[in-house]
Image 1 (cartoon, rainbow, N blue to C red):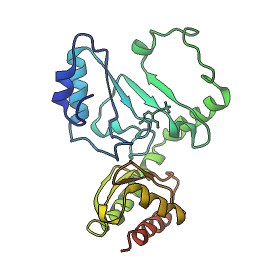
Image 2 (image 1 turned 30 degrees about the vertical axis):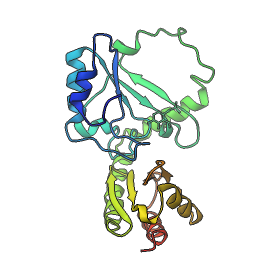
Image 3 (image 1 turned 90 degrees about the horizontal axis):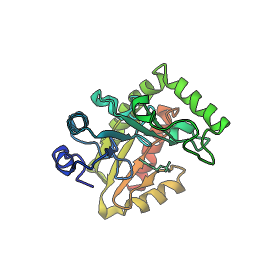
Length: 231
Ligand SMILES: Cc1ncc(COP(=O)(O)O)c(C=O)c1O
């Protein structure tokens, strides 16, 4: 484990025994932490130089959420493996996947890796449909446009109960002024008003609405946050 966003620290931590570098291209549980520009490109270069695999955990950030198919696309970077989940099940089935080219994944032959639920036909059908839906780019564009809309209304709360906002597409980390309560307390008050957000065990709440959400619904949700903050 090294400090997030510090590519030099990653390079320094790699030894001859290092098989892979595993990172979230944007951290989710951490509070929607967006790394400095160029970080993902540097990780790609370091992995190439050191002959280590670059594994991108896109379980939260992937599949349209940030306005691109993958958060790695924001820097035009292709990792060796993607870890996918959550949205891959279309919000209705538990589906996760490790995705990569055959030069990496080909080391596992059919039948060599067993799993109770792996390859479940219904789950696989839903996962395939999600992949098809991403092919037109419409979902990504929607996340991008609605994310700009959400960013504008959240930014207006900075200095009014909110100390910082980090946003990528339709995914926001909102830092709450400690004087008004913890992220958990604010999340519970929002729940009473019908808005589900997730806290980070600190001062941050994460807003990750379904990408089919409407702009008017986002406005309503931000209004609930404003009321909870007493502003
Ligand atoms: C970014 C990220 N990586 C990995 C995981 C774990 O995935 P799984 O529950 O499929 O093991 C989660 C689960 O919440 C996650 O958010």
